[in-house]
Image (cartoon, rainbow, N blue to C red):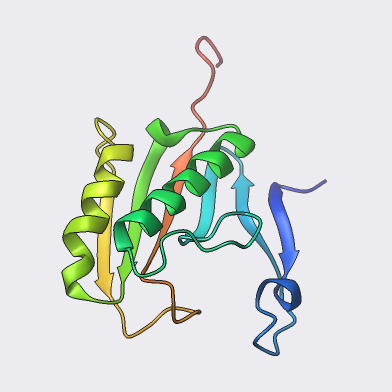
Amino acid sequence: MPTHTRIRMFNTKATYPNQSLDNDLCQAVRAGNTVYVRGQVGTDFEGRLVGLGDPAAQANQAMKNVKQLLEEAGSDLSHIVKTTTYITDPRFREPVYREVGQWLKGVFPISTGLVVAGLAQPEWLMEIDVIAVIPEEEGAA
């Protein structure tokens, strides 16, 4: 019996046709009451980039993806406990964090932020991954 659920499984051959990769991955994993969400970027689930050259627009799309994946796993944004945000230029910090902050108002997760030399595709300006929980039902022992 599996101890976890894989959400939105895919193979990198389809996701990264410009690279010779053949890895089986998924967008999120629910393990017990914890949800791990793969790094999300400004690309929708149909593979279309949103916000070419616009880090805030990419952050908005990434958070839309995070919201949808958490809901598919049985959680939601209010149950995020940790975020890790990657940006490719320190000047993107304010627009990206401002956008993410709007999605997480009142949540108070712990957060790590990194400036990196690049992401998997050159047009990606930011990426965010999250860890969330699925709260136990009230009255459950």
